[in-house]
Amino acid sequence: MNHPYTSLPAKAFWKTAVAEADRAAFPDLYQPTFSIRPDTRVATAGSCFAQHIGRYLRDAGCTVLDAEPPPRSMTEAVAKRYGYGLFSGRYGNVYTARQMRQLLEEVAEGQADPRLVWDREGRFVDALRPQVEPEGLASVEEVLLHCDYHLERTSRMLRQADVFVFTLGLTEAWEDRATGRVLPLCPGVAGGTFDPEAYVFRNFRHSEILADLHAIKALLRRFNPAMSLILTVSPVPLTATATGRHVLDATSWSKATLRGAVGEFVEETDDVDYFPSFEIVTHPASGGPWFEQNLRSVSPAGVDKVMSIFLGAHGIGIVRDTAPALPHLVDEKEDDSDSETDLVCEDLLLQAFAG
Image (cartoon, rainbow, N blue to C red; front, side, top):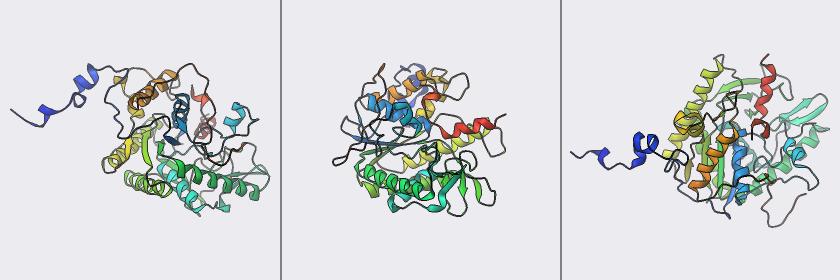
């Protein structure tokens, strides 16, 4: 008897695609619809787990864009502390789809909002990038000058990008009531003062994330109409939750919502791929365990597995035992001068309040 299942490929069945498959390589788990070659200009953004993507691509000889390279005399450790080389822009971690959407809108407008500058013990920081200047700056005006430079350089970088890789990490965020801007950190954690009249907690729903993803794609196409998009969901659990739920329950809610929204978006959109880093790390069928003893940090072996599958699907060999190099700016005209501890994750500051 004929029915739809008689002609399905091996990847459609658990027995052949998982139980009896080569789970080290997971053939057909990720089948990109567009390629990444050494000359493909890739831009990255997202939660702290996304920092691995740019590093592995650079080590493999790929062209990873960097809008704001560090000064030539700066050591790698200092550069990382000041937010250089983590992503393709010095925008710090972008945890939510709303934060990504608003960042792209601000870059398109090219002007920073002076209301989003925080005081930090007499110094000043950009509320949207509170950790990129760890010591803060001397005045609000100096922060805004830095912001304007950042926006201009990020705009230039996005116009060059062939592929944009965005890793979604959270659904929870704090929103500034006056501006509507979503912040990477709760006010008071790394600058500013928490005021319940000024800030509101948001836990974005599926429909909101889906709408933001559509807006993100449209905004990226404003910079480069031919730009392709790769989405992935971070497997890293929440550091803390403000929902009132148990953090394990809140993590499941957040990741399921993100995964559902991304899945629906990819199904109804062209030139967008989903890479299953979340599934590779969290599903027992992939081996592991891929978490460190704290059950939150992805182990070096876990990161290596994720990235070997990603690179292998694009026909790129993984490079091991090489020191990560700081990325370079792909710019025709100008040249500006693995455990969790290897990453810069602002949300880890919340652990200080765990007691």
